[in-house]
Length: 211
Image (tube, rainbow, N blue to C red; front, top):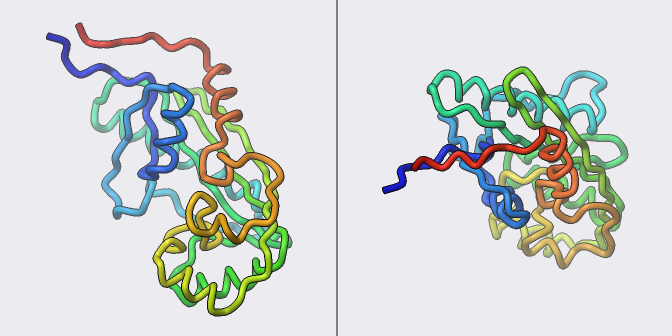
């Protein structure tokens, strides 16, 4: 009887959206579950550095998450396989809008995005042994004008919780979107083109099913 198989890659993320997107392009993976709180991907410090651009911020966090995932593999003596990690951040006029600390901050973020065009950066990092490859997706999203009542109702639904920029484009917030330019999957949380490019750059991986 076949036993558990070694993963082609590990996904260092708890996000169900990233798991669905990775499965969509046929990549076999195993979630790399960490010890942190339920909504935390890794122990990476998400505090922005002074003068850090949104692109640099997302890239730094994706790299830190991939590194942390590789460290967990070594610590737990798991089968060695590449670790994929990602980080998404929203930026308005160059200002980083991370995950809201509470629902009041979520409402403030959405009010700032109302009727405006903003940027979404998603960085992807792939770590295997000493190699660390990264890629960055940049997209633009335009929101229609939102009423205070709409914002309150959306935040009360809970969908804004733990979301960069306080919204999820794949959810109820889709009705706020006038236009997007760039990668829809990147806005959701894992740009599939860039992810596929990283995996191809790493080279073919063996199918190591236990026999």
